[in-house]
Image 1 (spheres, rainbow over the protein chains, first blue to last red):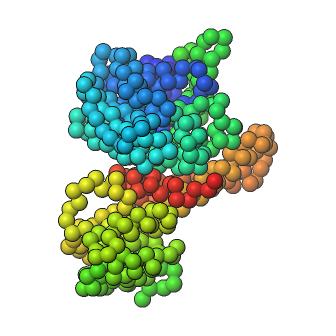
Image 2: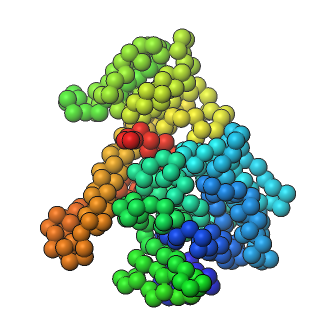
Image 3: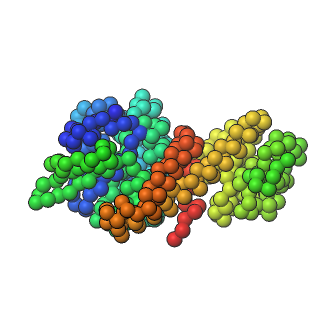
Amino acid sequence: MYDLTDVLAVDAVSSIPPGSSLLVSAPAMTGKEAFLYDCLADGASDEQGTVVVTTGGDAEDALDRIHSRSSALDPDTLCGIDCRTDSDRENLERDDGSYITRVTTPSDMTGIGIGITNCFERLHDVGVDRGRLGLSNLSTMVTYSDKETVFKFCHVLSSRLDSAEFLGLFLVDSTAHNEQTLQVVKQAFDGLIEIRETEGTREARVKGLQPEPSEWVEL
Amino acid sequence: MPGPDDPVVLIVEDEPDVAETYRLWLEDDYEVRMAQNGDEGLEQLDGGVDVVLLDRMMPGLSGDEVLQHIRDDELECRVAMVTAVEPDFDILEMGFDAYLSKPIKSEQLQDTVQNLLERSAYDSLLQEYYSLVEKQATLEATKNRAELAESAEYNRLKSDIDSLRDELSETLGGIEDDEDFIATIRGLGDSDEP
C-alpha cells in the first residue's frame, strides 16, 4: 500500500492499493509541481523508486528538486524522462547516480513508453521493485496531440503501472481545458486529487478512492 | 478449413520450404496469404491483413523496408519480424510488434500470431471504450445531476463503460510485459481522428 498522508493529511490516501493511478488536477500557479515532487520525494525516502516524466520542463531540474527535498533518499533510485530534447533519444547516468532518458517531443508517446520501460529496468537493476511515477503534465501532451490519444495513453500506462504495482500521479492544469476534456481524462484514472488556492491558502481534496469525496484540507 | 471471417496472416518469406511449413501450421485457423519477397508482400498487403510474418533478410526489399512502408502507410496490421539470429538491437525501438528467431517451432508461431491478434482486439476495445467515455463526458457537461440520474441513456452508458473496462483488463491480462506495453502505445496513433 502507498501512503501519501505525510504530504496530504487525508485518510483516503493512507493506504492506496499498488497499481493505482491518480489524476492531480489544479489551476495554473497553485504549486501542483511542488505537490508532485513532495509525493515523489516522500516515496524515495522510503526506499521506493521514482520515475518522473516532464513534458514541458527540464527532467534534470525535476530530479534536483526531488533530491533537495530529502537527505534520506538514494539518488540511484531517481529516474527522469525529459520530453523536450533537441537531440535524438538517449539515456545517461548523471554524476549523482540518477538516471535520465530523453525523448524529443511530448507527442512521441512510443518514446515516452520506451523511456518508462528503461527506467523500470534501471530501478530493477538497483534493486527497487516498487515506486511512484509522476507525470508533469498531461495538459502539454493534449496540446501536442489530442485528448483521445492522451486518454488512451493514460489508460495503457495505468495498466502497465498496475502490473508493475507502482503508484501513478498525473498532473493536469484544470484551467487549460474545457469541462468535457477534463471529464474524459478523469475516466482513465482510479482517483482524483484536486488542489485549489483560496485567499493565499493551498488546499486539496481526494475523490474516487472512497465513496464520498474527502473534505478540503490545507496543504 | 478456414472460413471467411478468419483472421488473415500474410507470410513474406523467400525460402519456399520455410514459407510452406508456416502455412501448414497456420492454415487450420487462419486465411494464409504468401509472398516470396518484399515487393510481392507489399502488393498483397491491404486492409484485410491482420498479421504479417516478415522475414528480415530477403533479396530485394528487406523486411525493415517493408516494415517502414507499413508504418508510413499507417496500415493497421501487426508485424512479427522473423530473424535468422537473436537480434542484437533494442527490439522495442524497431517498430515491429514481435520477433521470432529461426528456427521457429509450431507452437511458438501459433502463440505469437494469437498474441498479436489479441493486441488488435485490445486496440478496438480501447477505441470503443474511449467513444463511450467521450459520450458520457458530453452528457455530464450538458446536463445537471438530477437530469443525469433520470436519463436511461446515461445509466446504460455507465454500465457499458464498466463492463468494457473489465473486458479491457482481461484482454492481454491488462498490459503485462514491456513488449505489449510498447506495441500498444505504438498503435495509439493509428486510429487518430483530427
